[in-house]
Amino acid sequence: MELWYTEEQTDNIRFGVKVKRHLFTNQSDFQKVDVMDCFELGRTLTLDGLMMVNEKDEFIYHDMIVHVPLATNPEIKRVLVIGGGDGGTVRELCRYEGIEKIDMVEIDKMVVDVSREYLQFTACALDDERVTLYFEDGIEFVKDKVACYDLILVDSTDPIGPGEGLFTVDFYSDCFKALTDNGILVNQNESPYYDQFSHEFKRAHAKINKIFPVSKVYQFHMPTYPSGHWLFGFASKGLDPVDNEGIEKWNELGLKTRYYNTDIHRGAFALPTYVKEMMKDE
Ligand code: SAM
Image 1: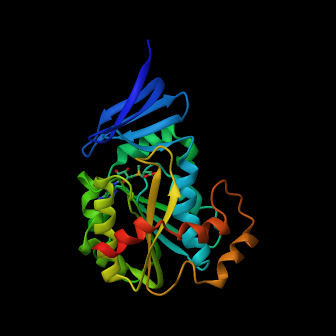
Image 2 (image 1 turned 135 degrees about the vertical axis):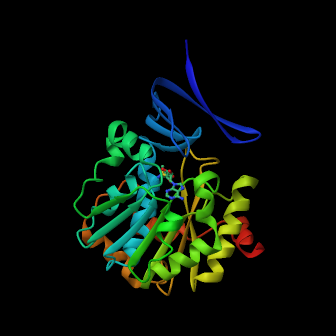
């Protein structure tokens, strides 16, 4: 008998993955947490039935959320990760010797516990001595922080449930305050392709654009997310991720990556016309 995981990506689009074994399922205080072993994707984490992380393509997302800001500002020392419960973002951050402190604020301890047990490929650096885990709401955590982080990465779920408040003007304003003068904010910015995702993308970008002097969007190919066309927001108080001679210096670090390179760094900010139009809409 065949077992399939089907994700309702929109009301009219479904995504199906053949499952070898269903390894874990439980309901936390925040969401339904499932881990499966899939034929094509390997170990796979879903939250409320939505694809979060899988062995096959997580490298793309975690390369692009970390190496773009680190190539833009190689002086980054203090990082705040909001969400990121699978640990993949922290894993990539820990590859930088210059980073001194990583605070990861994940609202749901069950996600971290499950990732430590079943997703060692992403959770492997959570015990790095520079990492401090807080099982709290990132929205509250950032409220009283002033100029104490060089980088904030919002590695969150979609703007529903606990993730909803991570897409608000108040939250982005609190992030602005929590960042140093050379601070950078990278946020999960959904997708331009299906209406329900492009609606959130436009709203998030319009809010960030009002708060940060530099506010751009970059794209990457994420096969198992709805449409495969996914976006991160890049905002800063002055540092530009493209008009920046320093980007190529990243190559001197000798970090081996499977997706990120300094060519795709620059290319990711070159957006399709329809996406650029959306950024003007709001
Ligand atoms: N890195 C994966 C990806 O590719 O998108 C998924 C990121 S991680 C699994 C998303 C995390 O955000 C979840 O573990 C969820 O519990 C967490 N989260 C959602 N809302 C949050 C909030 N308000 N504060 C802290 N963490 C939150």
